[in-house]
Structure formats: structure tokens, C-alpha cells
Amino acid sequence: MSKFDKDTGRDEFFVQRDKEVNSLVDPATSKVRADLVEKVDCPLCGQNDFTVLFSKHGFDFGRCRHCTLVYVNPRLQEEALIKHYNDKDTFNDLAIQFMDSPKQREVNEALYDTFFAKLGRPARGAKFLDVGCSAGFLLNYARNKGYDVYGLELNEQACELAEKNYGIKPQKKLLENCDYPDNSFDVISMIGVVEHLPHPLDTLKIVHRLLQPGGVFIGQVPNVQSLVVMVLHQLSRTFTGRDHLVYYSQKTLHDLFKRVGFSTVETFTQFHGRDSILNYFQLLDPFGAENYDFLPQAFKNWILDPENFKKIENKMHELGLGLKMEFITRK
Image 1: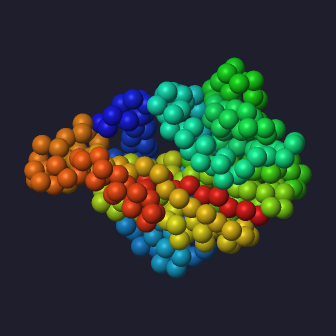
Image 2: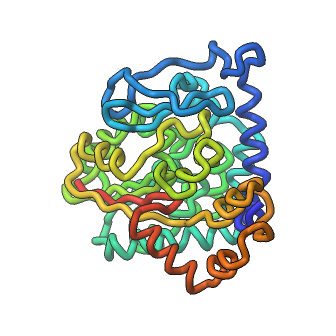
């Protein structure tokens, strides 16, 4: 496992996730049980014309022949999805734990610093809504920056921690079921949420409606055109059919925001995944312990030189090849 996975507790989280997802598979078909899934059209352009790229954990992952969006089809029925996020199970507990780890907090705060530097100082009384706010980490940060904060979160344990640790009381609702007036918020965020949305166009139209003119929508999604995904393909942990329903590239993310009505979009990427890529180059488990023993010596010396790798990392992010893609878009 990578040092980051070990430091944050992600290693246990991924093992439990795969265990739970595999439990949905019908051994007779090697696919997710038919009574749990539904076939869908492309969540972006609405066409029903896609190429199956691969199957993993009983799910098929396809690419739309019209807009190029990558998505799961068939996918879990919405009732099963909502039940999963409401469940008090080991997977959700482990997710909260790794999000609360010191190393993950350090990473999150660096991301928040980047976002808020771009947002600038809020006006008095500016309102900030975090959809899928987990245990309130971002809301606490936003409040300290001067925003009035609001949160939505389905997981009960996360809501309890947000109230206990920060005095923040998220609503345990989907955005679609809230009755906020139009033009209510200055900023709305979805960090690691958009890829989970079964109907991204419909949900983001609500986001657009709830933002004030000039309001900002920020967030983060896995990058389906990251270097890690382009090297590892289906082995990448990005692909999990139960949890991540849609997989965005820079092109399809911009297309999504354009269809919703946002005027400007800025994207940038984070994280490199060097350890997974180098392990894979050596025919090793990409998520096993970091190992450089089987690399050609000259390449090993070059790639492990911090100055050399920093140049590679900078070029990756310049080209939009990082593991995670962040976005800032304005109404």
C-alpha cells in the first residue's frame, strides 16, 4: 500500500469497499444482481449508444459514442444508492475515519486554501452551502473565513460528528428535497459528490438556480483522463460501480456545466499517483507497498530524484493529468 493510504486508513477502506461491492454480484452471471440494477441512457447527452470498455466487480463501464462521457450501465437503482449512503455500515464508518485522519486533513486544508484564495474575501452575510458535507470539515473552514454555512449530508454518523465537533447541524436531505429559495447562496460546493449523482444535469440545474447571480460552484471529481487511469485502466481505484456512477474528463465536465448554464469554468488537478504507476511498470500490485527494486537503474535514479520528479508533477498538472480534478464555475 502507498504511505498515503496507510497514513490515512484508506487501505482498510478500500478492502471493505471491494468486499461490500462484491457481495452484490450474482455468482451465476458474474454481474450485479438483476433485481438491484437499472439500465440508463447517457447521464450527460441522453443518448443510448455506448461502448462497453470493461467490467469490474459485476458492473459494466461504458463510453458514450456521442459525448464521450464514461459511466456505469446498468447501475444500482436509486433506492439502493440512497440506502447505501444512509446505512450505518463498516464502509461508511471507515470513510469518516480516513477523512478525519491528520494526513487527510492536511491534504484537505491545502485544497481549501486553493479554493478560498480564488474566491476572495466574502461579503458580510455571504452564504455557503456544502452538499455532501461529511463531518463538516469544509463548513468549519468556510465559517472561519466569514461565511454563514449550511450543509447537507445523508450519513447519520457524519451529521452527529459535525454537530459534536463544530456545532454545525447539516440537514439529512438530498438537495432535490430542500426548499431553499432561488438565489440563496453565494457559494455551493460538492467535494467528491458530482461523480455520485445519478442525474447530474438535473441536480446541477438546482445548484445553478440556488446561486445568486455571480455565485460560484466549486468541487472536486476523479479525473478519468488522469495519468494513473490511462496507465492502470480498470485496475484504477477510481472505478467503483456502486459509488462512482459517472467519470468526467475535462471535456465532459465543461460540457456538463455548459448544458446547465454556467458561464465560466476553471479546472485544475491534484495528486500524481507515482507509487501506483511505478509499481505497475514493474509488474507489481499497483496498490502494494512502494517498490523500486525492478526498475532499470538509470531510470530509477532519475525518477526518484526529487527535482526531476517535481518537474514531471508540474507538467502533469499543467496538462491536466492529476488524479483529482477541481473545478470553479460561476453563474
